[in-house]
Image (cartoon, rainbow, N blue to C red; front, side):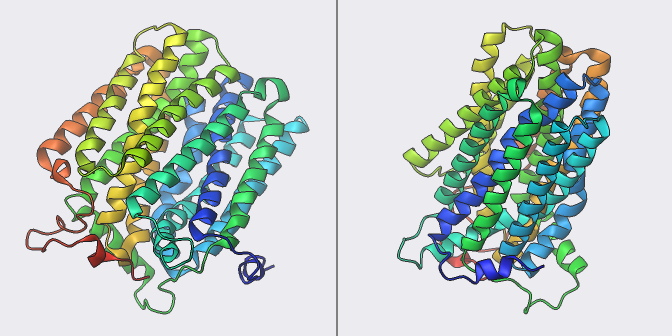
Length: 440
């Protein structure tokens, strides 16, 4: 039954375009924050599964994205992105609500958790390119309204700050899983996702290539991949994301940290929730600072420095530190990660050809989410053999080598703000920000 069109066509459902965008970002990432605590918590602390099975379950969260993201990027350019966001937010919300009810009724099994992970992964695969590519036209449309405009890099930083704030709220609520049980909180995740999905009806219409493109979808997909890997800026940005997906997010964040909490400190839901909150508080503080103190003129250089913090932080887990010191460690890690996430998004938004933005974003995101399943599975096996602390050296060394090679072989350190497409080809003249305004 069509639901979205009557909502979107209701002229009474109007609000500032960028405000509506921030609400849908908050809705998704509040649920994501809850899930970050609840999902590994159920596998690790409630079901007491092995490292290998934790890695497999975490891989199920992102494996569908690896398959769907490139095609979802093409779809986001050809269809109404508002509808994609609406329906897949609701789909994810229904999945979380169903899981919550199953847990509340006592039907908890490992394979129910894996099935939920696959469904959420499908929803995320379609949502991310539609949502992330929407910010560019939303910013452009906002400039034409009575609410006024906002510069793109600042808009990306503000959206990242809202993302981190919503994640922190979700993770903080996850602290209470030890008292309420995870089922109730999965139902709360469903509520947040549905609120975010409904907010898509408040967005202005975002034009698409539906009536313009006659190319086969596979041609559009190949064109997006080519745009990324022939660019001396987009290519190293994507390679960094691949390394982060395999070594840091999939390996350290999804598997290593929950197992260190259980094996080295005997912790549970409160400990994993509070550590995750400390990380994302650091990321939020970094983004507030970016909003407050203005634009970064050399975002590539700042990005590499911020990722270096990740290298040091992951390596520090090798040591058997007092538990209180982990809060300081992950907070500093979050500071670096917050800067890196915001700046990498703004660089890709500025460097991507406007008519290929959704495809480029999907390929860029594929670097992260394509690497996460492999990283989660591999780290589960490694931790099972070496233990969690010794395994922490692997992401430290791996990411460090990748960053050094990229700095020595690509122009990433010379990228300047607003220098869109200047580095896409040796004979391409420098273009300003006004030269590449989106045409969609």
